[in-house]
Image (cartoon, rainbow, N blue to C red; front, side, top):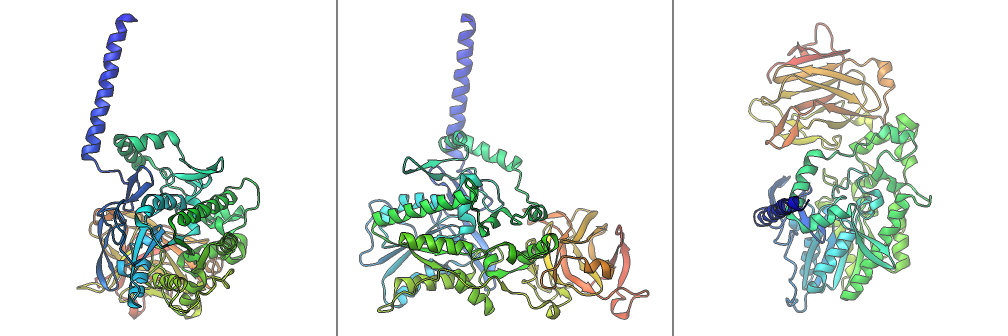
Length: 579
């Protein structure tokens, strides 16, 4: 043993030196790892934050624009550094929140902080608005960020955007990694009450310590997670059969009175964090306003909502509105905040009113649109007051339910023809980008491996027309599935234009689950290629919906369709002539 001791010690020392050298190299040459697909990177105190100096080119209806994060990883102007002098006389308004304030799908000048500053300046009030936010932050991370940046800024006003549908999950270790909406659970810090104080806790404390102290470990962990992470998968129908909400994050719209229930505990933990936020603002000498942002499904019944409503009717015989209380989060927060004397603005009512008038208040990624930010900014401005105007009291119980944005099924088109129009309202996830008509082709959507749409039910066949991209891997074996109904498999063996036609007997159509006359369908070709080398993609789709049954011989209007593709089962595939 004595003779072995020296070689073992030397070997151990060599391993330690090698690890230290690797750690030094990682700190010198590797940036903090990005634990999300979103532009956030590791932060030892906050868990993660925006990537400093990040730039991204996006496009909206007005053309291209740039999403830019500053040197601190935040949208908007830099926050003051410790020891800097505040601008004399300026009203300093600090907005704190998550992805709703980051607002990637909205230009910076259209975000609520920018709008509030511009409006105040237009009324000759010297004001500076700051945006302290990061994608996927919970209230605990926002509180830690306020503690980091608040003293140097010394804000006069703090506006906290609370998004209950995610924040309750992000605030509770008991709900960690149970949903698809909370990607940063394994690395975010949680603040929990212990001994009368809020203490930082992590989902995996040992890993968290290594992550905070070793760039090498953090980088290797991220590589392993990216390669081995198993996404959360939820069987909506099974959950409904068990008399639960169809998605775990929708449990926020149900009451949970049982002791020890993780959702009940998440509410209590969130209340404690809001109390702590108020104490922090009091210590800074700042007024606090809590702005409550609703989930898109509370405001409008979109394609994803129709899918879940149809499935609920098919499985339980009742719709979502009978299962879920869409106004519950606002009622709970309004009650608690009123008891605590914390001033509040609820956006649920104003957003529903705007949606009922035809305004688009959410983007396709289910965050506030430019119009949504305009509504939020107006509520903040009312609260700040204008001269002698008294701020209006927020409603305690918003009336009504989600606004139907689609027309009655009897007035909807039988066929969604994307040749000249996007048809955004009937589309859910999976529709990547629309290209307008060009040389030799009509307008079309590039879809992902799965694409959700809702269709007004009509007599006739289900049809899909489009084009197989030249870079797609062949053959393509996919299906068109009616949610709560029939699955129609298909197989495409050649590139170029294609058309699929699926015969639907009347008795089969009558058995499909519906929501207000609509069915939900998922077109699933699978991943055929990567768009831009990055985005999983499937087919180009030019039309989807119902068409009169095919005749033999075909009518004159359909003579450019000739049988070409093999389709298993009852479906027939036809290939279109070049457009």
